[in-house]
Image (cartoon, rainbow, N blue to C red; front, top):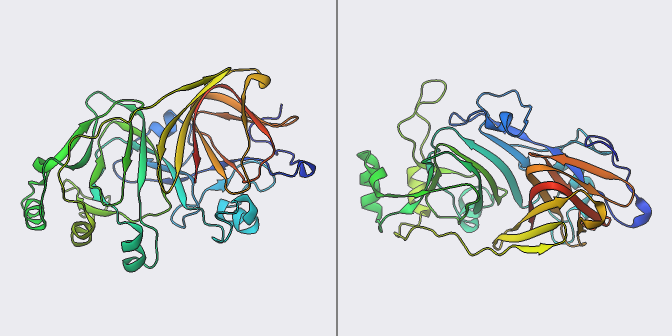
Length: 342
């Protein structure tokens, strides 16, 4: 078996393309910590390391290909050169995939924020995508929580007054979280990740964030971080709501592995896979169709994604891009993965 960083020998005669590892871009936002280095072996020279953009063609943080014949090139350039890798749904997008996948380490609270939807973003943000997203909680320290909307319905006047007086926190709905929770955050939903949370985020490929409130924090230069109150209030859903409940999830067991659906929306689908076999023949059969790619994000353990003669080993923290129309593959090992498609 080849090692995890070697060149996978692509079998052109099989009529398909082979997967490759990705190397993330890092972000050093002030609320980040060290867990992405400590727990996920992210060798990025940033302190703190708040986010790693594991699979991204967004210009604010481009992923690199980390194995195979395209090693060292940006994912966007490879997909622009090989549009068939994106699949028939996405091949006209000039190398830009519609999703972005991150790890997030919240040592401190993130700002209270909201994202616009696609229509607002297209009109007001130079044609950008909006941002709906999903959070999967990888770990949560005791007492960790997130903000999800308001405890009761607000109006524009009341919200602006609460922001100007610094009293907005009393109106925000705070939700305790624990490992393995899942939350869908549609565009327009006011939200924030709280301190002590380690998150995998799947989102639209957008970097539009409107900050409502930032706990009066200063940036590394001693200045208040910018807020975007007018735009945030314009796009925010001000209705109060009950605390979000965890959706019903059903594990489907097969010999050597199990799967469950975490989230399905108009932008992406995310499934979780639990691998529990070291035998190739008992692994999960896996092959992408010609219409779209898939992305695999390893959140626990080690495993192998293999064809009949070659394989790509992966460990906790690795992200793998599987082009559309792939060769027939098998997944096996002792690992947990998020499988993302769109």
